[in-house]
Amino acid sequence: MNCLTDYIGLKSCSATTPESGIWINDLPGMSNELLNSIATSDQVTFKEVWNSVQRVVYEQIKSQLHQHLFDMGQVEMDQTIFQTNRINIFNRQVITPTDAIAKLKGVWASAYGSKYLAMNLKSLYVYNSGSVAVADVPFKVYNTFDWSILHEETVDLEPGINEIPINQVFTLQFQGFNLFFALDTTDVPTIRNPYTQDWYSWGPSDCACANQGPNHYWDYQGFQLYPAVMDLDPELPQTMNFDWAQSGVYVDLELMCSIESFICQNRKHLKMGIAYALASQILLAKMAGSNQNFYATYNPEQTNATLATFNEMRDKEFKTWARIAKMNAGDICFSCDDAQVIRSVGIRS
Image (cartoon, helix red, strand yellow):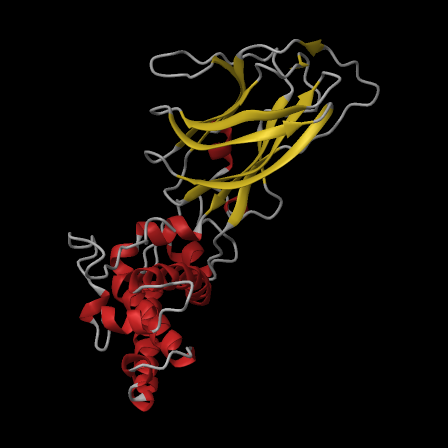
């Protein structure tokens, strides 16, 4: 969760005040000396301990806040609401190969409807119509608002159809998604004709939260998905060619209502709870550690009492936030038959 990394600051790690305005050192008992004293052999110093604590705590926070939201209003997050259609190979279809060409071939995807959306790229599908394998083929994901590269890797392609797991989640860019999933086909022969049925369209997930309500069927009609071709190294103001004749490169995409996006949008209201969660994890590491020094072993009874206090204050902060968080029933992520508070009053109050 990049939006929370170093949102709570650690003194001596940064010369500037953290965006939250809070240092972990401000909480009772928290200090760089304590972090340094509990460092393990693979952490070395307080900075590595701090980074480790943040990684663990932010995963815990996602689960905790997700549960609080569900307890307060039956609101489910991290659900797939729309997805690309699954591959359905035609029987006895004649494949029309096309030569390798120095172009970017792939899929352009657009979506909007909520500031809590995330797009999950599960897999890349490529039909290699050649007779030999091709190694180290560049694959990139561009944000076509500004042509920044959000993800890149190389893939190996055997003859025939290939499924390459990617499993990369993208958060909103400028309040929406305009992404180009692009394969460099300089050395990859593909095919001209569509190899599968209804590849280039979004469809509602079977049990998606958004699809349980009456208001959002028009939304996914506005989502766009096109086969696309461009020159290598695209940049503004180049025009993307939505070439329906190109095929052989496709992606398995999911649109999700993301708990991470929800937390990022509300982090200023959660900052004290986050700070208490970090402090709690630090004290837990102290109690469970094996280092024998003054800071690591001093006054275990007080450490245990402070740990309990931090946990109590963390839970109070998170539960209070979940109780008063405002959720618009017009948002695509909160139109759910089973979310009684959202369905009946529109906005949680």
